[in-house]
Length: 462
Image (cartoon, rainbow, N blue to C red; front, side, top):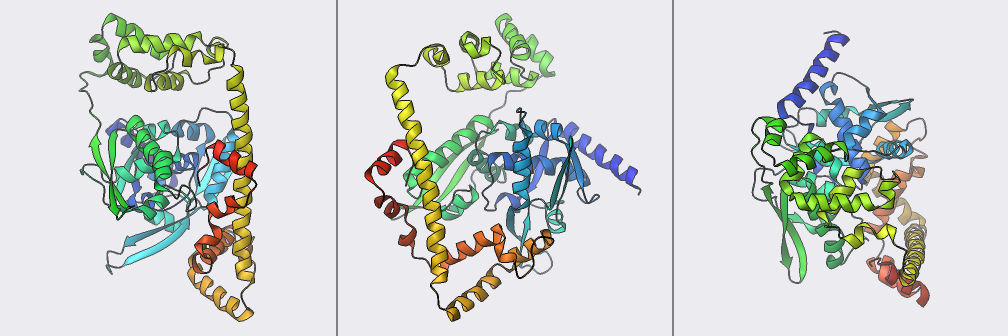
């Protein structure tokens, strides 16, 4: 088979996928879903979109190409700041994921690690990217996978929400996910160990918000079930239900014929003024009464930003107004002058957040100092023995960095790699540092009263 034939076959396979399902759907290996990582929302969306685009030719080509415009369309990105896309792609080069897959021949679990992307290049409007051989082998023809709808993915507003969605779709068709240890779940959601250690705060900032996003934007309805050991939450799982879908007869045109005159007029406005697709407009008319839609449109169109043409995404604005039930005072808040007390509170909050951000940066520097000093304080013999253990622990990660960045690092200098430095500090913290040495609470106690007050006012959690 020549290159042209392979390209035509891959193109036809991609078209067939869309025709069969009526949507852009990615079969993502369960091992890459149920792995710990700290990907941002944009990085998660880009990872899935690139794999979706490359999948028909994954094993046929060493390097894949996509236009930046196509990539933005796949992830639902409407901004013009392509530097953000470039930065996210660069981060994917240094993001290593690990997975365990049962070997069909031996029956044993095979552990592997690889960077998400092996290389990436932006040349004008084109983006070229490649996967490592190990990553391609894992991603191609997965026996266990979750189906990710790229349109649904584009609706998510936080990495926590998208991470929960990916970890739930693997169990679609079952009443529940499996029970997950809380420590494992935190890693799956990409929450650092020192962030929201109190479960009450973790539930408010991560768990509840991610569930709300899944239930708002996806075709699943999920609910958490918690399991305790004594007074501590030790495990959780999620009940799963398919979102109820109304039967469609004859497509959008037939649905429109069934609408009232008021609904038909609203549908035309949703399509023409707010740039929804036909399917989205029909769904909105099914989910909300006509009066509510008309009221929210009126509120939006009164705003100065809308009238001045500064609303770049009217569809998202209207969806927020419907979901959050904006009232007159909320929708026209930008039209009214800020009251002095609100201005003062906002200024105080902004100042406290600036202070809190400085505290968090100082705390991270403090952690690094304590960890590095702990290693320095070891005797030469103990330090040598410890580093030998570390090389065994991080052997795969070190080999990966040496392979992917062989022009930059050697075995003598690989410990200067930011990635290996981070793994080393994590290993030192795990093996040598007492928990109380790095406790955020104790660090805060040493700060002046003014800084502690600003920290509390900012809403940061310890």
